[in-house]
Image 1 (spheres, rainbow, N blue to C red):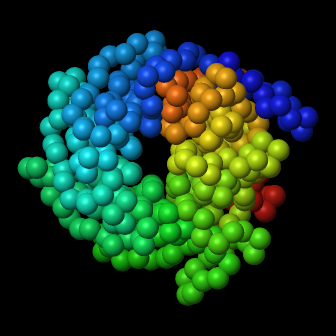
Image 2 (image 1 turned 60 degrees about the vertical axis):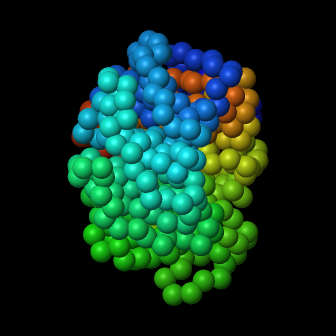
Length: 366
């Protein structure tokens, strides 16, 4: 069950209630994604299969088979809950028709493990990142899928990519310790961000106390597109205002412990809570963690005994976090519902209030 963290500094929280858990001890889950309509969710695995579940009941609907090696990432088409893309260590990207249980497109370009995928909002462009250090942009509407461009993005594996809400900018993260911003239309690198204390023109500095160039595991854009959230393998999560080249906040694990230093655990924003914007992350060994974005305090934890003693690799939200899901390397899927008392507010009025409150405190709304 969801429990508050064992720290005297944190008040007991009823933020989320667990709807159910699914235990598949023979499966190593690598990612979880809710469909756009919220009716189903998909989990990928290291065995090359994708499992589709009913969100309400947790019942397994179908299994998609075709990849010959482990799957690193999956993503639904934003315009069609029946279309899913997956990328694998077998060097392929597959597009699936879920109801037909078949692969409808097979994309090949990358020369090493494919690590991350992202659709544009129109669903016609798919972007992939790879351990071959490149990003490939695909037009999936053409027969067989057409490569629009390939970016020589980094000097180490590309670990994660994100898109601004208007799809104009790709944000990439890499094991080289850098985040880069690319113009989607021109492929031009607009900016480079790093935790390094040393950097050339256009490089942002996090802190002189930070270890230089730890691998960046995940990157996520805020709903308003003004902030970047990243997790690094120094065990910290950072919130950036990338336009100002500035780290606003740094988040740590329970009692200052490292969050992720071995695995690429997902991070997400939760904006459904009327009290404040939240951040949720998987971890190497301390379960699922949720922070208040402004105070940097951990406000909720799902204990490892419940959601997985091994690393929580996959995290996703539906309806801005009203429903939350995670999956672990030791085969546990956990689906949670936000307590209704945190969601039953007039959204438009509350959004205006949040902007006013944060600006009055010298903070920037997400």
